[in-house]
Length: 188
Image 1 (tube, rainbow, N blue to C red):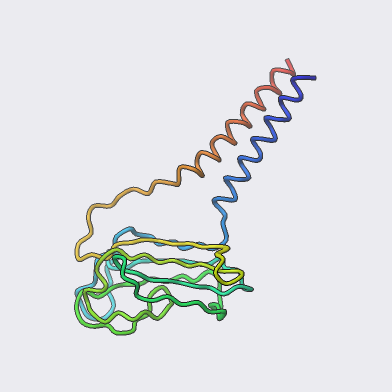
Image 2: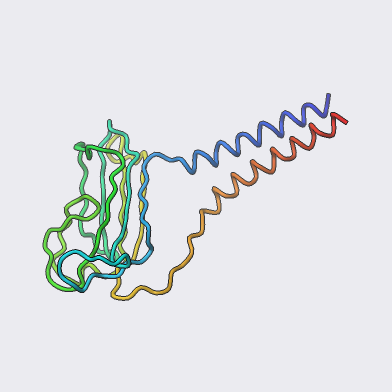
Protein backbone atom coordinates (compact mmCIF):
# COMPACT_ATOMS: atom_id res chain seq x y z
CA UNK A 1 0.00 0.00 0.00
CA UNK A 2 2.82 2.37 0.85
CA UNK A 3 4.48 1.91 -2.55
CA UNK A 4 1.36 2.88 -4.52
CA UNK A 5 0.95 6.02 -2.40
CA UNK A 6 4.54 6.97 -3.23
CA UNK A 7 3.98 6.27 -6.93
CA UNK A 8 0.84 8.40 -6.99
CA UNK A 9 2.57 11.28 -5.24
CA UNK A 10 5.58 11.07 -7.57
CA UNK A 11 3.33 10.99 -10.64
CA UNK A 12 1.24 13.94 -9.44
CA UNK A 13 4.24 16.12 -8.63
CA UNK A 14 5.93 15.22 -11.93
CA UNK A 15 2.87 16.09 -13.99
CA UNK A 16 2.43 19.37 -12.09
CA UNK A 17 6.04 20.32 -12.81
CA UNK A 18 5.67 19.44 -16.49
CA UNK A 19 2.48 21.46 -16.73
CA UNK A 20 4.11 24.46 -15.03
CA UNK A 21 7.06 24.26 -17.42
CA UNK A 22 4.74 24.01 -20.42
CA UNK A 23 2.69 26.99 -19.25
CA UNK A 24 5.88 29.01 -18.84
CA UNK A 25 6.83 28.19 -22.43
CA UNK A 26 3.37 28.80 -23.86
CA UNK A 27 2.49 32.17 -22.38
CA UNK A 28 0.07 34.27 -24.41
CA UNK A 29 1.70 37.49 -25.56
CA UNK A 30 5.11 37.04 -27.20
CA UNK A 31 7.76 39.05 -29.03
CA UNK A 32 10.63 37.36 -30.83
CA UNK A 33 13.56 38.75 -32.74
CA UNK A 34 16.10 36.74 -34.66
CA UNK A 35 19.27 38.66 -33.78
CA UNK A 36 20.68 40.20 -30.64
CA UNK A 37 22.58 42.72 -32.76
CA UNK A 38 21.84 44.15 -36.19
CA UNK A 39 24.10 46.48 -38.15
CA UNK A 40 22.74 49.80 -39.40
CA UNK A 41 22.37 50.20 -43.18
CA UNK A 42 24.85 52.75 -44.64
CA UNK A 43 23.31 52.75 -48.15
CA UNK A 44 20.23 54.12 -49.83
CA UNK A 45 17.14 52.11 -50.66
CA UNK A 46 16.51 48.80 -48.94
CA UNK A 47 19.40 46.60 -47.78
CA UNK A 48 20.01 43.27 -49.45
CA UNK A 49 22.45 41.65 -47.02
CA UNK A 50 21.12 39.63 -44.08
CA UNK A 51 23.35 41.36 -41.51
CA UNK A 52 21.32 44.59 -41.94
CA UNK A 53 17.92 42.92 -41.52
CA UNK A 54 16.13 42.23 -38.22
CA UNK A 55 13.30 39.65 -38.60
CA UNK A 56 10.64 39.86 -35.90
CA UNK A 57 7.33 38.31 -34.85
CA UNK A 58 4.88 39.23 -32.14
CA UNK A 59 1.40 38.08 -31.29
CA UNK A 60 -0.71 36.09 -28.84
CA UNK A 61 -2.74 39.07 -27.65
CA UNK A 62 -6.22 38.87 -26.14
CA UNK A 63 -8.55 40.64 -28.62
CA UNK A 64 -10.82 41.80 -25.79
CA UNK A 65 -8.10 43.91 -24.14
CA UNK A 66 -6.15 46.99 -25.18
CA UNK A 67 -2.67 46.34 -26.55
CA UNK A 68 0.11 48.65 -25.38
CA UNK A 69 3.66 48.99 -26.66
CA UNK A 70 6.75 51.00 -25.72
CA UNK A 71 9.98 51.65 -27.63
CA UNK A 72 13.15 52.94 -26.00
CA UNK A 73 16.78 53.26 -27.05
CA UNK A 74 19.47 53.28 -24.35
CA UNK A 75 16.81 54.05 -21.75
CA UNK A 76 15.37 57.05 -23.66
CA UNK A 77 11.67 56.61 -24.38
CA UNK A 78 10.80 56.94 -28.08
CA UNK A 79 7.11 56.27 -27.74
CA UNK A 80 4.40 54.55 -25.76
CA UNK A 81 0.90 53.88 -26.96
CA UNK A 82 -2.18 51.85 -25.96
CA UNK A 83 -5.11 51.10 -28.23
CA UNK A 84 -8.03 48.72 -28.58
CA UNK A 85 -7.48 48.78 -32.36
CA UNK A 86 -5.52 45.57 -32.80
CA UNK A 87 -3.62 44.46 -35.90
CA UNK A 88 -5.78 42.48 -38.35
CA UNK A 89 -3.78 39.29 -38.04
CA UNK A 90 -2.04 37.43 -35.24
CA UNK A 91 0.94 37.04 -35.42
CA UNK A 92 2.51 40.14 -36.94
CA UNK A 93 5.73 39.24 -38.74
CA UNK A 94 8.18 41.25 -40.77
CA UNK A 95 11.71 42.48 -41.19
CA UNK A 96 13.07 45.88 -40.11
CA UNK A 97 16.28 47.67 -40.96
CA UNK A 98 17.88 50.82 -39.57
CA UNK A 99 19.66 53.68 -41.41
CA UNK A 100 23.12 54.81 -40.28
CA UNK A 101 22.83 58.30 -41.79
CA UNK A 102 20.13 60.86 -42.48
CA UNK A 103 17.16 62.07 -40.46
CA UNK A 104 14.27 59.64 -40.67
CA UNK A 105 11.44 61.45 -38.84
CA UNK A 106 8.44 59.13 -38.44
CA UNK A 107 9.28 55.54 -39.39
CA UNK A 108 7.55 52.20 -39.08
CA UNK A 109 9.21 49.82 -36.65
CA UNK A 110 7.78 46.39 -35.88
CA UNK A 111 4.53 47.49 -37.50
CA UNK A 112 4.17 50.70 -35.41
CA UNK A 113 4.93 54.34 -36.22
CA UNK A 114 7.88 55.63 -34.18
CA UNK A 115 9.25 59.19 -34.21
CA UNK A 116 13.04 59.10 -34.66
CA UNK A 117 14.40 62.55 -35.45
CA UNK A 118 18.17 62.07 -35.48
CA UNK A 119 20.27 59.37 -37.18
CA UNK A 120 22.11 58.55 -33.99
CA UNK A 121 18.73 57.75 -32.41
CA UNK A 122 18.83 54.39 -34.17
CA UNK A 123 22.16 53.30 -32.68
CA UNK A 124 22.08 51.72 -29.25
CA UNK A 125 20.20 49.14 -27.23
CA UNK A 126 16.53 48.92 -28.24
CA UNK A 127 14.01 47.69 -25.69
CA UNK A 128 10.57 46.85 -27.06
CA UNK A 129 7.76 45.94 -24.67
CA UNK A 130 4.19 44.84 -25.34
CA UNK A 131 1.55 44.43 -22.64
CA UNK A 132 -2.17 44.20 -22.03
CA UNK A 133 -4.06 45.60 -19.03
CA UNK A 134 -7.32 44.59 -17.34
CA UNK A 135 -8.44 46.79 -15.64
CA UNK A 136 -6.28 49.72 -16.80
CA UNK A 137 -3.13 49.86 -14.69
CA UNK A 138 -3.11 46.10 -14.00
CA UNK A 139 -0.86 44.21 -16.43
CA UNK A 140 -2.27 40.76 -17.27
CA UNK A 141 0.20 39.74 -19.97
CA UNK A 142 3.45 41.16 -21.30
CA UNK A 143 6.33 40.42 -23.63
CA UNK A 144 9.55 42.25 -24.32
CA UNK A 145 12.72 42.00 -26.32
CA UNK A 146 16.08 43.70 -26.47
CA UNK A 147 18.46 44.06 -29.39
CA UNK A 148 21.42 46.25 -30.30
CA UNK A 149 21.63 48.43 -33.41
CA UNK A 150 25.30 49.19 -34.11
CA UNK A 151 27.56 50.22 -36.96
CA UNK A 152 29.45 46.94 -36.50
CA UNK A 153 28.10 44.07 -34.37
CA UNK A 154 30.37 42.10 -32.05
CA UNK A 155 30.69 38.34 -32.55
CA UNK A 156 27.45 36.40 -32.14
CA UNK A 157 26.52 35.18 -28.67
CA UNK A 158 24.67 31.88 -28.30
CA UNK A 159 21.10 31.91 -26.97
CA UNK A 160 20.71 30.41 -23.48
CA UNK A 161 17.19 29.26 -22.49
CA UNK A 162 15.60 30.55 -19.28
CA UNK A 163 16.96 28.42 -16.39
CA UNK A 164 13.68 28.30 -14.43
CA UNK A 165 11.73 26.82 -17.32
CA UNK A 166 14.42 24.24 -17.99
CA UNK A 167 14.45 23.33 -14.30
CA UNK A 168 10.67 22.80 -14.26
CA UNK A 169 10.67 20.66 -17.38
CA UNK A 170 13.76 18.69 -16.35
CA UNK A 171 12.51 17.93 -12.84
CA UNK A 172 9.15 16.87 -14.28
CA UNK A 173 10.85 14.47 -16.67
CA UNK A 174 13.09 13.13 -13.88
CA UNK A 175 9.99 12.53 -11.74
CA UNK A 176 8.32 10.61 -14.54
CA UNK A 177 11.46 8.52 -14.94
CA UNK A 178 11.35 7.77 -11.19
CA UNK A 179 7.70 6.82 -11.47
CA UNK A 180 8.46 4.47 -14.36
CA UNK A 181 11.28 2.88 -12.35
CA UNK A 182 8.96 2.24 -9.41
CA UNK A 183 6.36 0.68 -11.73
CA UNK A 184 9.02 -1.51 -13.34
CA UNK A 185 10.29 -2.76 -9.98
CA UNK A 186 6.83 -3.69 -8.74
CA UNK A 187 6.18 -5.81 -11.85
CA UNK A 188 9.22 -8.00 -11.18
